[in-house]
Image (tube, rainbow, N blue to C red; front, side):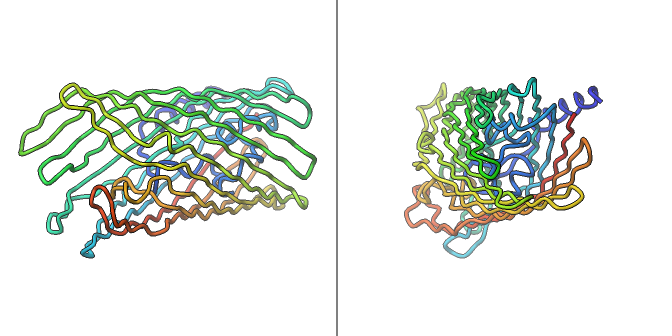
Length: 393
């Protein structure tokens, strides 16, 4: 069994690094773990399975023994851009989102864990529509995190968790910069940050939690290619991508037996990613101005445990857009987002299996002074189906 788990661990690592990720709007993904996602991502104060490594590492104090949890999501987005003349462009590039969490309790107070997941991801791809003057564009921007964490039960009611977050970032994009000029960027690199959390069990009915994730700069190296008039020139390039710090607060209540209700509020320091500058050997520095604002998410969800070790869940999340419509592109959209989630789980002795479905849609955006000239309508919808299995021993 241990050899099988090790093989599975390595396989998931390679699948996470190699798979395509898709996110509907902005850069934040829908969350981590099938069970938390099905509760709308309201998990900061619940934090009692492997996904606590992401939501609140202090929650590991609630997990006995060893648990390995692996999941995969099928993501089906549609990013729709309607030009001012009524012509419609769509990106429907599907993808997969894997995640892996491993936790182990050394004593009744000390636990450690390791998580592998992607908290930021976006990919969109639009083809040429030369009849309507629309040039093809695509953009892929992904950050994958490997996070070792520890938690310690300070007293019976209060636990603390802390850990590192090592990140691998990728950019692969092709953007038109005029009728005859195109910029192609490919780069990757690494960054290092941290995470800390607290969990307070006020009594058997109420828990509160808080999580802080630090800012992070991912230093990426690669190349930039300029295409113009049939000629191509390539230069080495470096890009520093600044990812936001965040603060999450949550409360979970158990008003009756078998029912848990949770509410989270999250703040993101998106102003830290206001610009992205690329430096090359051949050309002056190039800065993409995102003009991002700090944003907030509100998440609410619930779980009800049924007889015979079944559980049902539902949730809702409102995610505030961070990039104003004056600075978005069809392949880099952002908007206020609504998420509707449902899920079901089943437990057998040492195993549990979770299934979730999410429907995501954004408020319509229609810029009137877009700095890139894309003043059409933006709409995003997305379907996600996730499956997760965990083994506890």
